[in-house]
Image 1: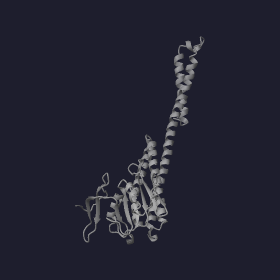
Image 2: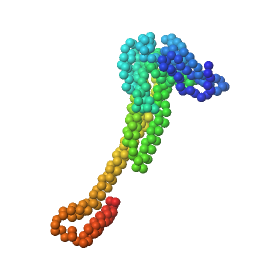
Image 3: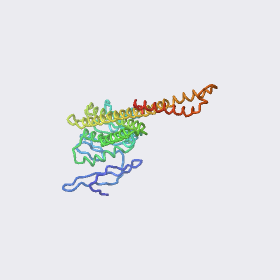
Image 4: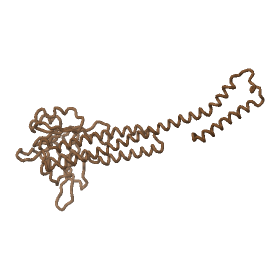
Length: 351
């Protein structure tokens, strides 16, 4: 056994194949500091966890008359093999082949749901997806990625000394997928502030692609928060009476948290639109200045073009052609015309 001191390890290693892993529990001993036990064990799926009274890992399923609810983690193949023994009908899960959102649905004998969690490091990449099913005795997570074991492992360490129930367990489990999202949205706001400062300094190079990328990522987050809010509200509705009506505050609080995050994400999206409008205005202003410059340049040299065309006709009897100082007179007239034009443009504040 490998003993680590008070620093809590949030990771649980789950190798490919899901047969062996490192599991962590933190225990509190009377009068002694917290110690984390990190040990390697044979990981035989399915994994069972008691979520009534206290959260703990168990080796066998409690009897039906114990009154305990059990959380179970399965792969999709194990779910097909064991759902009948866990009290779910054969049709359970038939509609969850394509997971596109976070949602929950009440059926006659059970509750089903799906989670579609965006990767916070790569929001535009495919999200993490898994499903869950609940009846009076079991809360089953069907996940081929070991994510549920990682989350439950953190909860085992964090809430090992706290009274547990299915309402509280499901709330803190789902809250793990919203943890640190306030800091994430604050980073987006800081990034948008920097974009705005660059734009105010006239540096709009690559500004539009960055704005569009940020807006797409924030839109995905906003939709995710909205789905989590609706999912938590549906669970708090307790349509199947699987939860204690007096202990639904955690699920309601989860819904409020998701609603708050959705509002912040929406504000950031609107800020992206403001920055895009500002970038468009800057681009239009830059284009207008270029057109204005070309217009002024054309206006200045238009009289010279007239003079050039006039004296380029080469008629035989043009008196200025044979004049001794005709060349210098034309130069002087052209210079005077340019000077007068510049003075007029300056007075009109066009230069």
